[in-house]
Image (cartoon, rainbow, N blue to C red):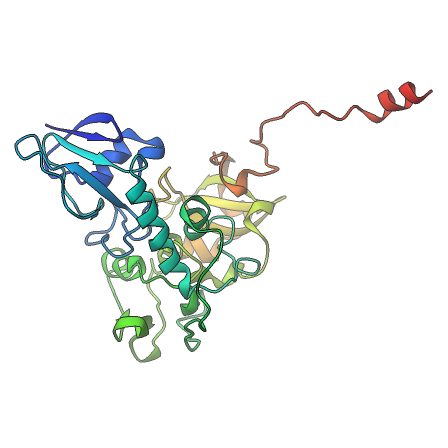
Length: 322
């Protein structure tokens, strides 16, 4: 076992573990943000650079610091390594610059974007971004491409994390889309405008950290914070059938895969469960899904903490006036 210290917290990990994985074992604010890395997808990571950290000591055998910041998702730990994340002003400033680059061409679609309220880029910008933008040029725009009747692609919002490409290639088993062109002209597109249509193609919606890939069947129907996420399951021959049913009253507005505390899918679900089973009778509703309190989804929900009001009831104020 290797001992690695991250933000003055030491943890023992197996050889081959990356800095990001070690930080997740510690948990809390020590964990760097990640927009492209996905533990369930092979080859992911190293694209967005939001998880950069400072290696203040390479190892116990070689205590020299690494001269430049490194991507924690692709850098393996060494025995005796010392890493700085939130304790390094250099890392925090560099992360602000990375967020600024991600937002350069990202449109201000939050008021109309279906991803709003559960968008990783919103959280990243709130925690690590600048208060204002210095960018005055026109933003990059792409032509609208139709990739099927179930999935909506909004390329202007894409940050090229490659998660959707890996998902269709590794989970769906039939990849007919990828990254085309180079440089700032790079874009996610299908081969000769083919549709993304496999039994597990809908999982690209769950892995997308922004609003570039959204559910057409849920498009503009409701905001996520108005819905109640409920754990549900059914007997399915294609997948495990364990999902989150987003309900308003007794009506199911959309179905998504269950995610862990790092926002990653626990079990990928099939398109039949996601798009075709929208009746409450199709599911066994287990109960409310636990939502982290720092999420906007938990606002005004059944899990909200009840705090005593500082405003007296109306009858008390009336008696005082009398």
